[in-house]
Amino acid sequence: MYFDFADLALFRHVVEAGSITHGAERANLALAAASTRIRKMEDALGTPLLIRSRGGVVTTQAGRTMLQHARTILTQAEKLREDLGPYGRGLAGQVRILSNTNALTEFLPEALTSFLAQYPDVSVDLEERLSDEIVGLIAEGVADIGIVAGTVDAGGLQSFPFRSDRFVLVVARDHALAKREKIAFAEVLDYDIVGLDRASALQRFLESKATRLGKPLRLRVQLRSFDAVCRLVECNVGVGIVPQTTAKRIARSSAITIVDLTDAWAPRDLTICVRDSDDLPPFARQLVDHLRISV
Image 1: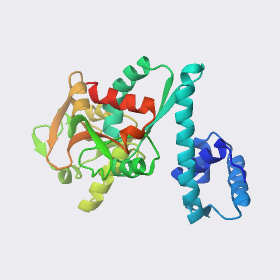
Image 2 (image 1 turned 90 degrees about the horizontal axis):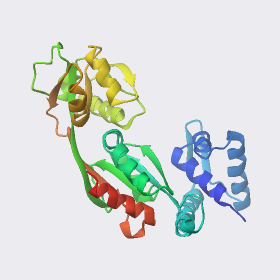
Image 3 (image 1 turned 135 degrees about the vertical axis):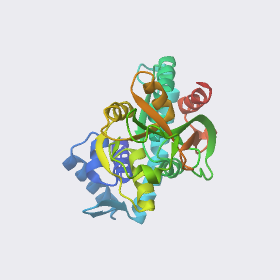
């Protein structure tokens, strides 16, 4: 029985993505090649690792055991590469971060830019997820660092303060809601909304809140950035929900009005979470320290 790092990395990608197709994309492999590799792993073990269906794949008991060991082996290999990095010319290490939408768009770009300038031999793999998903994935060892909303229970993870922000409603200056100082999300649902792509963590979060209120989210346009949302809100296409940091920045040069949201989830204290800072690879620990002090 022999599995190389490529096999183990592919298997991890497939399980985390929930399908062989998406796992193959993450591993930069053709679907046929990825399927063949997984099948050969199962043949070598003499037992299925995945249960396949039209909806994707889930692990068998043997697959869960394989995933646990694959993550351990790949983490140790990454630590080895980092320790030996100064002796070679390649990348000294890679840090994987999972972040919610707010932190990813408003705070991480600047912080990561300064970190990467300081450590040119490090690369960062950054992925957007919902805060509650991030906590579970960090606990499982899927990534090194998570940035989540402070309202989420981090369980047994170590956590550190990162930033504070809040979600607000933005409307055009001549919109019917422009004279309001505050509003509840339930009332916002009576209006057309300019939002982010449905795949974004924030949009999924808002859709879940709308479902709980028993109202549809009337998405008029879906975009890929908060800045783009504000630009279409200015044109009265609909109203939008964005971080206050974004809204204040754009309001200086755009005809939009900011209305406070009264919902308990609107304030966003952002938190860094890790499994155990002492067990992090060296560059991941340095990045955590950098994120904590960079303002």
